Amino acid sequence: MTEPTRWLPEPDDSNRPFFDGARAGVLKLQRCDDCGGWMFPVRRRCQHCGSTALQWANASGRGTVYAHGQLQREYHVRHRGALPVIMAQVDLAEGVRMNTNLVGVSPADVHVGMVVSVDFEHSESGEAIAVFRPAGTPS
Image (cartoon, rainbow, N blue to C red; front, side, top):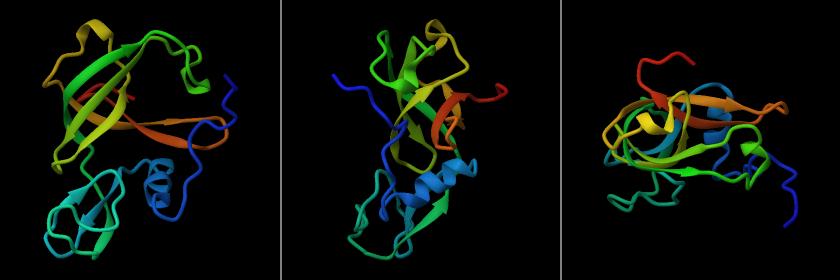
């Protein structure tokens, strides 16, 4: 297995607003101008109405844990010194489900239905990714 050289994938034209938003501390998702539906991951057409009138908009950053698990082994440079990593699927207030990590909480305290809010994990090189923590806990 080769050692990853980048902390995150290289953004491209389709997902750059998501990563730019994360660096700025804002959760950005696609939203349809025609029906108002939210989308994640990136789409070319609205998954609700088929429109191509998609824009990037600031999301609320609020959600609830749908499912969770733990990563006990280091598979990526981002996991160094962070085990166990809590992986989760979070249902956002905008109606989309996002795969993410939970931070600022003990694995034993995580439960389905837990209310969470977005936070951002930053690398030394300036990359950033959205993670979630229990609502009301400090960053």
